[in-house]
Amino acid sequence: MNETMKTIDKIAILCILALAAACGQKKDDPTPGPKPVIEPVTRTLTFVLPDLVLEEGEEAPVGVKTVWEAGDQIVVHGEYAKNQVTVTLSAADISSDGKSATKTVDGLYPYEREDCQSTLYASYPASAVDNLKHCFFYSKFSTTNAPIMAACNSGDSFQFQRIYGVLNIDLGADYSYYELKTSMKEAVGKEFLQVKLTDKTTELAQYVGESVIELTGAMEGNKLVLYFPEGTSFAHGFQLKLKEAGSDEFTKVYRNSSPMEFELAKSIDLGDISADIKDYENPFSPDIKDLDEGGNANCYILKEPGKYKFKAIYGNNTKQYLAGVDAGTVVWETWNTSETEGVAGSIVSSVSYAEDYMLLNTAETLHAGNAIVAAVDAEGTILWSWHIWVPETPITDCDASLGAVAMDRNLGALIATVDSATEKVDQKSYGMYYQWGRKDPFPGMNANSGNDPFALVGTQMVKQNTPITTEESIAKPYLYACNKLGNEGYNWNVASIPQAWGASGSKTIYDPCPAGYRVPLGSGTAWSSSGAWVFNLAQGWFKIGDVVFPYCGYMDDNGGSYAKNGERSVIWNAQPDSKEMEEVLCNGMAAYIKNATYDGSSARAARGATVRCVKE
Image (cartoon, rainbow, N blue to C red; front, side, top):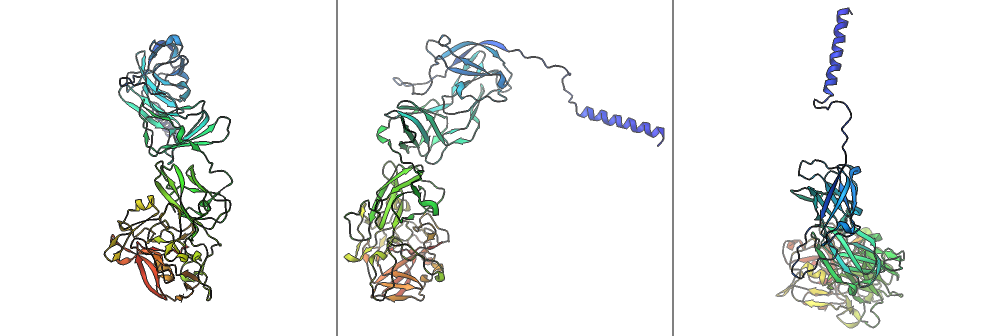
């Protein structure tokens, strides 16, 4: 390479380096050198509490701060966290009416803002303020359970704004600790609440942390004052657990199902609630058995006495919790006989509610039978109910060659039906009756007293010759309803319900079978057609394959009379009659056995008939 070319290359390299240096330097870069030192200033500041508009004779709500007190601490923000100053008020700083306080403050670092004229920012109480790495005109509150306020300055004055509503409760007795949360896991606060104020707009929750679903804390005395950021709402009320003085465990509980919404500077005052505080039973105690281990359902099988729990959710649904539950109750019990003496409490002795769980206790000596338990609200309205089934003998499964593995007995039967050539069928194998598409059982037929039902202890079955809604059927599981038109009986429901038991294949929240089982699909079982049935009318049974059924009659749709014991049976399937699927009044698919013949594949949906559950 000659000298000329070498010179050109050197010039080119120098040009590239110069260009790179120019690109990396901003045109408006300040002249190199030390940055100017910003000196702190001293100012005499006045902190003003917000006005509270009251009606004549009205007192300020308890918990709403209306006066400054000696010892109150306010954080005044500079531009950075290191520039924050905590101001502690003394009695001499506070005006005679308590609404303002004036104090000379050192070490302030005012800063310019583009969105308003203020140069400083203040937050109260200091105990709830969390330092920000870059403060500017924000307050970050590390807890929202405080009477939080914020203000930006106008000259040397700060006009505070309240950012909270208040809940006041008189417990009627002294407690040492509380825990508050909602039944639907709604937020009761935030991990932090970051507030921005300007002299033009208010943005009370510009940035917020993760939701807090419970408030806890130590307390003294019988009064509880709790704070919630403006806009917090409890659509389904709340639950308050309490520890009595000297106790390490929660011993009492109060539930309120009223919707609540907290407004700025407003108080919700519940007054003295002592009459509504109840004993608390801990559902997480190790001696309580979880019935949901195999899955939740509308029916639970108990095999031995003890304490049990299951989630207070809609049956066969793993997530949808009930709202507004106040307590549990036993609706009825039966031994599947005509007996009433000694029945009450021999199956389920008590039912309660805690922590989204239904809790039930059995008698020390558990008697075979059936019961309905329910979750109720504060007015006693049933929100949902469950079938508790206590068989006398262990339940087994039958031959799978029929297209579905079936239970060895009808739903609610105490024993399996035996296909004996010499022994007549025992009424304990009859089981309970169901209207097509409903989740709750009705008493089966008592063979020892003609065409009468099993005797119930508790709320008795009510018969009604007009149809009801699905919602009414939930609130009144004891109400047997039908729509009787002329000589034809049809649905119990005012609406068409073709998918009530999952005709499309999925188990629904109304399926009455225990976890792992379901009402059979008509197309999936051999007993949905005329098939190879074997009948023994004299001994009261019929079967197909290894699945044996009793002639247990049914409850007719003409007002609930019991009929044809020992002569007929109806076994429900999940499908409605396909010819009437779109009709308001429809039949349900079923195996209809009449005497010694298979007599049809559907029955009136208002009829009370048996269910033989099959494996899912």
